Length: 270
Image (cartoon, rainbow, N blue to C red; front, side):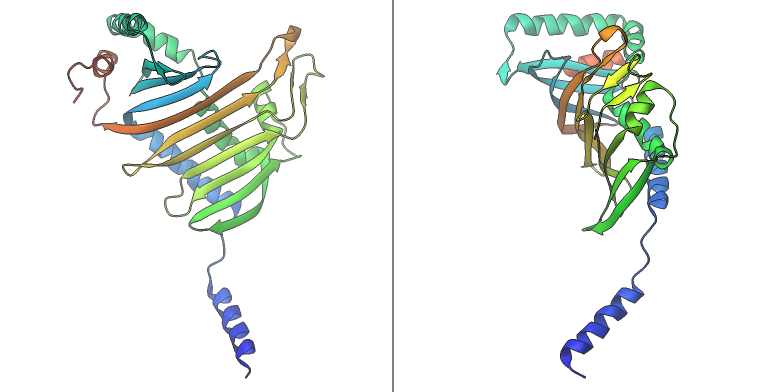
């Protein structure tokens, strides 16, 4: 038998013995459940944040962040790469001291806000329901798949209708079945209520990247760019680019005063 033909039969035999790939729905089901269970562990970290967003007025803010069960406390250290002035540093200390004295008020403010990561988690739950998948590939230990709107789905609510209009990609770690990357973008404008309720423009979208830190999965980069108008021509545009680094694991769920003490250089919280 010619060598080339023998190699062909050997290749075909190896492929035939390889396990069949998971279906997109199976992959998503396992990944979403793992993400849900991970949220219940309530792991907390201290880390450095570099954010340019509407909140920062378009400037790049470098902040030290401590996570608590009721929200994230932040201490600003630099703006656009320049350390803040002594006067502003004192203002930061005063602000955090006031939070430590009134933690319940801080908790109420945080509960009223919905961050971009919550929206990304919400989209994870919508993936099996509102989207169809193709180009499913296992490469270098990572499952890759593309998604686009399911024409048979009928989402309700403005945010869900905008999400349903997006197409994008999902990447899942093939060992831990945890989310590595998700991005979505609008291929065309989304008009809600014949344009009377909202118009969100093509090109709007988001992306989120995650990696393992001390054996735990953490979100390290979140980008959001939404452009559009709501009722009475109110802008619904949002823009943010957030990167996280230098994670330090907190061995227990710190209180708000403990988090303030960590940020201000007080006693360690455990």
